[in-house]
Image 1 (spheres, rainbow, N blue to C red):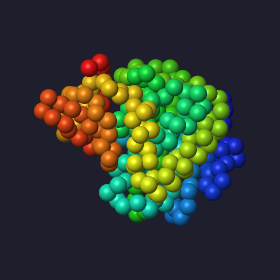
Image 2: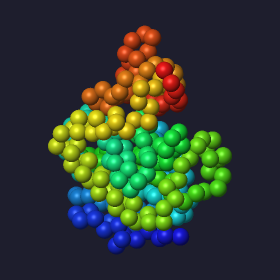
Image 3: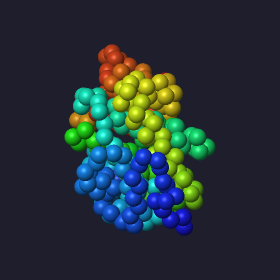
Length: 244
Ligand code: BTN
């Protein structure tokens, strides 16, 4: 099995650290002062965290699990778009590596309808942490355990993949700092797995909204054209999509 190696990930201007095991790279990276970009990758997480309080399964050596922390100078109200910016950055890098990945709002990485990876963005006091989890080596039984379809990268060069992903994240974070979400919005829409489709979206309060996917608002909200008019969803997830 390929082993993670900080020297092989090495990125100019980024402090890179690899650990065999930790609770969650997002949690641990916040434990140190962050005055410049830092990357922490782990072979295994004992308490990997997903979006909306879910768990992220990280068996040893099976996936790519890392967090990139960087100072972020942008008004707090704009940071809601950061998960989408991170999705664009990771999808750009994976496509450059030949992976036919698309984005599912807000920021799942999908191949067809199968989930390849997820992103957990957390911000605190002028620092943004982008946590990325990507399924790499096939884990038997994972689909059954999660109750959904899962895709795997199946590559044996995780160090190179992490370097490419982190490089792309650094570029996108700089773009975001200079120009806001507008810099990533078109790319997000061009990589939308469900462009032009009818969506069912589960809102944060559990209600389900149905309507046509109408792209993204300027702040990253998902616009859905329902029978009652245009709605903008800021918190929720796409549960299914189909032909109009
Ligand atoms: C999701 O799809 O729910 C987001 C999953 C994010 C998982 C990554 S793995 C590295 C980082 N550390 C964590 O605890 N979570 C993120």
